Length: 244
Image 1 (cartoon, rainbow, N blue to C red):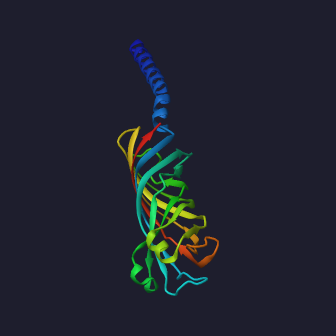
Image 2 (cartoon, one colour; image 1 turned 180 degrees about the horizontal axis):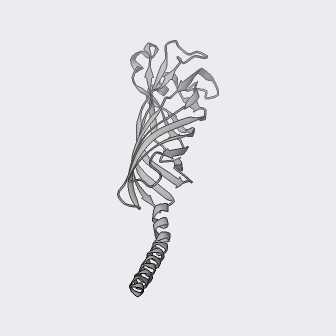
Image 3 (cartoon, helix red, strand yellow; image 1 turned 30 degrees about the vertical axis):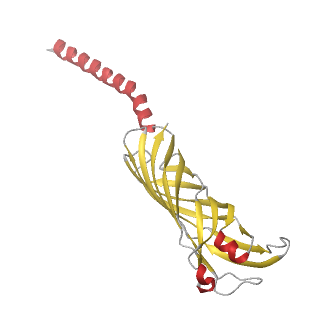
């Protein structure tokens, strides 16, 4: 009987040792699976919806009741995400700068009311720190983020309805720095591929100056108008991601 118990004890010890060894061998790969890829690039469609507000244009030789209505635009969205320790990630939102049109608003424009008066390209990189509610690697991954936005307006162009009424015109918009926030949801097909949808807002404000010149003598300023625009943008993004 004693010999029987000793044999079973030895077998049990060997089985336990084998189980511990097996778990030890599996632990590194399991940890590697849990850590997952550290970087993700998303590419997709971004829709910029402006809810602009501004005071009427005012200044030298500027008629009353002239305002502006900033339009919407779609563009290619590009996002880079880097996982951080814990349930956090760093996100940089870029994308191809959309061409945004501004229309004449207000009764002072007369027959030009509603016509497009300017076009501008909008560069708007935004950096976020995100919090992931279920961790960075959940299959369904809801998150929120806070960050900072920089917006630069380039290639501004006065359109024919404006230049026809005012003469040659230069448009200038000041750069903007402001806070940003977004919410989003990632669905992961597998560790490599995913899809994300986000809704973002940002504090984007700019001082606009419109300067018109004499068609006969370009050195003579015939009118100059200024206003402050609060764009109140909302950006909707749907993109496909690859992790590595």
